[in-house]
Length: 398
Ligand SMILES: [Zn+2]
Image (cartoon, rainbow, N blue to C red; front, side, top):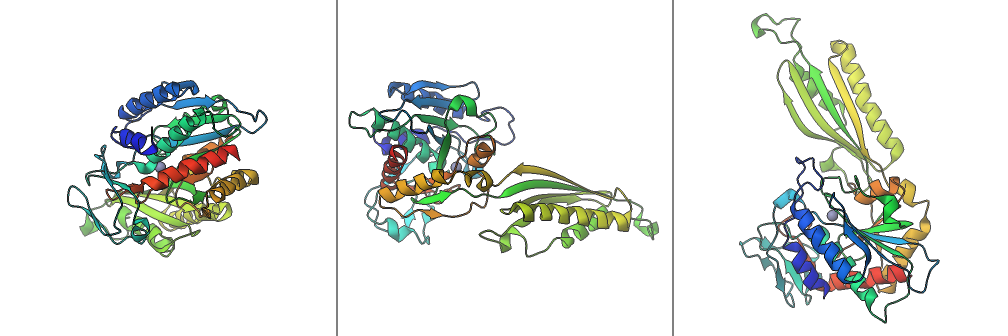
């Protein structure tokens, strides 16, 4: 089966994950897809193909001619972003003309620099009512197609290959119940990135921070020297963080403090922040700045007025992956073997690979070939998916 045929089947299964649901997987559709994938792996002769009770799908392809080669894992996630919910009705545009694309519901894809470069290719687009789900069903389809290719008599020699499809990546839980020892790989790659050639092994260090301000509420007519307005103190706190270190003013390796939400009365105010930085030392300094603002305001308004609760979320996988330069070299060589110059850039977010790296499975991220993830305008060229099958084939044979 072609990578396109697989992809078109997978994107029609609704697997939007749901942050509010604590179960794993967070939505039942992910197990529907998981069952389908486990079945297909079995049919392809992949060993030990199974879906566990949490919806994780695993399988192993034993070595062929290279018993001493490292065991390489390939991982993709089955859920899709809830940015625009639902499964899509995909459409294939043959021999794309490079012009604006009008989707079934009238949405127009236009104004993206990469569009003219895709002229002449076959594009898969959405109906306009949901995401496409190339993030990350393109990764799933590419890995599945590789599995099929490796069953052919003329398949290249390779070491042990470990396949893993995870649920709930989009809500940050894809690594939670991943069974690293049972997976059995020495290192792995997530196939979960964008345009062909993109490679990522650096992400943010991340924390969340909940700032609670306790005020003193008194009738405004008799409040003099007594009222402590929690909302105003919260604003003062927000004003103490550098305004240029916000997501809207930062890029590349620049970190930030991001105020996600605020609510308040005179009596109580709550600010929710996320803190991000690629540099571990600067990341600690950011947390320290929060604590200094807290201490300053408690000095000014009384102990216990402001409480900043900081919770670490994930860490930059660079610290781990850099200890194994051969993993990165292997991926670069695989792209180059297919005539593509890899482009390495820092992720301004996190990946499941980051968590897995700290769980003992170094795990950089490779491209899928897709564009405009997490929106109705998501699309992927068929040629890009085919190319990525070639790339991961070079990767495991390298
Ligand atoms: Zn993804």
